[in-house]
Length: 208
Image (tube, rainbow, N blue to C red; front, side):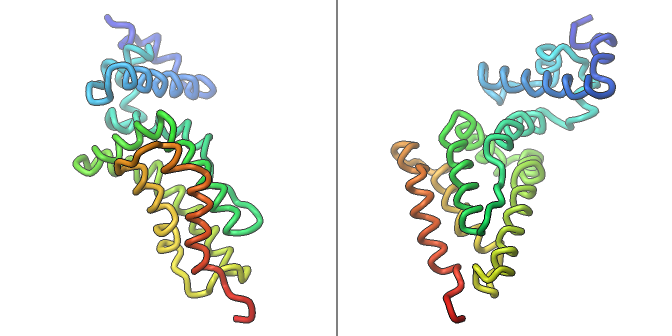
């Protein structure tokens, strides 16, 4: 019987903090195998064997390989690029965008680019990216816009989703399409210029 199929290994994954350690082993295994041999070749069996857990243990948590890959990628990215809430909407979004741009410039960004591309033809992967990446960040960012409107910083008639599309849509455009030089296309200087351009039409004018 393979190591990944032993009942003893499954026992290591029951209850906290063991469950947390088991989860980390699975995520690490998926990431290591994907970066070494390509994510298209990943299997539940391979991940289980590398992690030293049973396949049933993995299936209790993840429905498919891509769900594991998304969790593995976003676990690190969520820590590296949280949505920040600072004194103003402009400061919050500018700082948050600089962090996510840094992730986009990294190896994780190259993997995310590939995942987004594949998701256009894979509904299950698209669902995982939406649920575990886009929707959670979007909810926090909408709240930043709403607070900016409530405080009088931003125009009262603004639609939060349109504002976020204008800001973050530019980042994803540069992530997904071929530009020369990662440092140029997603630099802090680019983020600052983008925020200046968009916020010029967002901020409430004095006396209005």
